[in-house]
Amino acid sequence: MKLFVTRAIAPEALQLLQDAGIEVTQWQEQRELEPEELIGHCMNHHALLVAGKSKIDRQFLSICHHLKVIALHSVGYDNVDVPAATEHGIPIGNTPGVLSAATAETAFLLMMAVSRKAFYMHRRILNGEWGFTAPMDNLGISLQGKTLGIFGLGKIGMEMARKSIAVYDMKVIYHNRHRNEEAEQTYGAEYVSFEELLSRSDVLSVHAGLSSETKEKFNTDAFRKMKKEAIFINAARGGIHNEKDLVTALNNGLIWGAGLDVTNPEPMQPDNPLLTMPTVAVLPHIGSATVETRTAMAEIAARNIIAGLRGERLPHAVNPEVYN
Ligand SMILES: NC(=O)C1=CN([C@@H]2O[C@H](COP(=O)(O)OP(=O)(O)OC[C@H]3O[C@@H](n4cnc5c(N)ncnc54)[C@H](OP(=O)(O)O)[C@@H]3O)[C@@H](O)[C@H]2O)C=CC1
Ligand SMILES: O=CC(=O)O
Image (cartoon, rainbow, N blue to C red; front, side, top):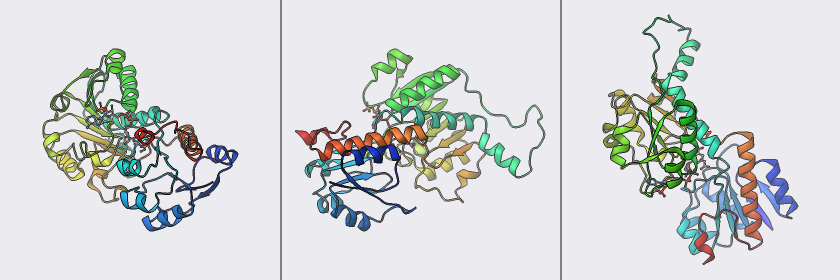
């Protein structure tokens, strides 16, 4: 059985695949595969492991319908046309859970950095602008006891809630489509409407997946309803906010600051005005990027591939309906 992998992944996972007798070809170039190149490789393979942003759309699936399994090296699956995969009988695997702590850590880091203008202060030092430490200079905003609003309180949101309560004794409110009773019991999280989430949050942290429902949910209309002192954090998908509207909201003082691990589009261009704003911190989509987490993600992806090639149920399938 032959597997094509779209990026270099952790060696521990390659070992699992080899032990299972699977022949692995890894794309080694430091660029994303073009769609035609991906199709070309898939024609000669039985399985695909997608590590990166390659689009698995209906056209790709109709050409590569012989694939027995596609495993994502991510929990998010907005790059896949899941209904089309199910129609073609292809199980799609993802990597939930193992990356929740690391991704929440990234959101937490951004929240702290924005609240104390840390990235901006670093840039000023690099420019030789240490300045005076006068009482009213360089002031940030304290997070102690403030209200954290979570849009999409699932596995990563739970970790964000836990850290924010433990460190800053924050009050957690959230908006999902369904109530998260575990979060309500464990963290005293309060379920609120989307409008209330906007109006009450001191920090609003986005942890929902990207879908037609969440696309550009954070736009001028939403930013206008937020507190002027609020911090907006997005460590989920850049498509959930409208970036031009975010720039305008910050410039016009509709909100105070923003921390982004994900941008719209990616990569963010170096001349983007967000990169020079004092109350903005941007990271290049490194949410799950620790050695431990990426190894665990690769191992789950490998286990999904092995199960799929053996005709067994994937340990983590995005489309379990494929087995009906
Ligand atoms: N920056 C990075 O590197 C990383 C980013 N991510 C992103 O984080 C996302 C979340 O991951 P994870 O926590 O594991 O996923 P979960 O499925 O555990 O949580 C997602 C939450 O979002 C809620 N949600 C989904 N749609 C909506 C909606 N339309 N309105 C309100 N709430 C909604 C869901 O609740 P309900 O169904 O009740 O609405 C659920 O609680 C991933 O999809 C991925 O895009 C993940 C890992 C790393
Ligand atoms: O963005 C990363 C993911 O796992 O989803």
